[in-house]
Length: 376
Image (cartoon, rainbow, N blue to C red; front, top):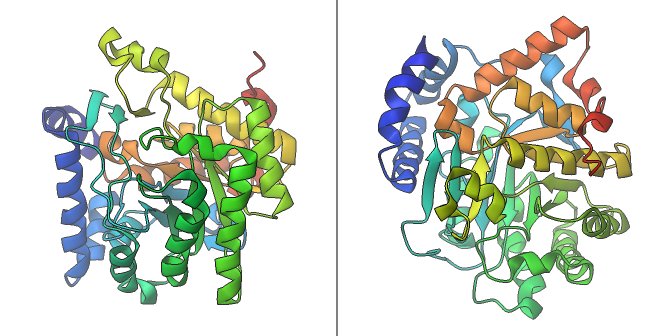
């Protein structure tokens, strides 16, 4: 009933509001609620009848980081790191904060986020964030919560390519104490020249610089690379060479899609509009899932894959998991499906385990990767 009310009454109203403004209000609202007595408990009631979905069969390990379930809030939802406790109370096992740059960055001019349908969004935000120092101060308040926090790292728009390794390393230097794992974001379509950093030689330099910072702290934390959905398999292979050579934790697949032919599915006027499309688009979801499957086919479980792109329920989460993802990320669906999306998805995963006689969700990882390979 609650889901029906949200989708038929609340969501149509939100569709008429500026998407980014709505997002900011919800994020700050969650920040306020998580700080008051019994606030997180209230969010659990709001999400799913007062109980957090906890079951040992949902536990996964992300290169040693233990997660209660495979659902992570993807980068871009909480860029400042101010609603971690609230999002955890809603049923997510982890929150990936960011993308964070060394210095504050306002991002691209508004409006820069557009709802094409109730579940599909184009954004051209441009790494808007308060900078690593502010994010570090924000995350300090969560250190005693023991909530796994991922941190997506990037460079400022005005950092030239030859300074990219220093920029990424600087973010990790400031945020190392607060991150359970880190993700090198070189795949956003909204920062000019950023995707060129996916080239093997440049990416190798960035990852090595980040690892040197981790070594200076005395221990390496899991480090992953986030890729674009448009990459060819040859380009993916080069990134996997970096991951395997440096013994990184894995890959996040994928970022938003910038292809005009995908955006034009919602009107020819969107074809040439800058920005990346995310959410409940069949073509985008298939592109991201096929990248997950390909990476799994090449590595056979030797690295971890975080699948992201069109995850909105148990069915779409299972697609990514069966294709080879250890964990999956949800971003756009928090808006389109409501704040109970994690709880409903986790319950759906448990139902699937029961129905199919599978002992744990980890046993499903990559079980059907061949079904999702793009053979074209």
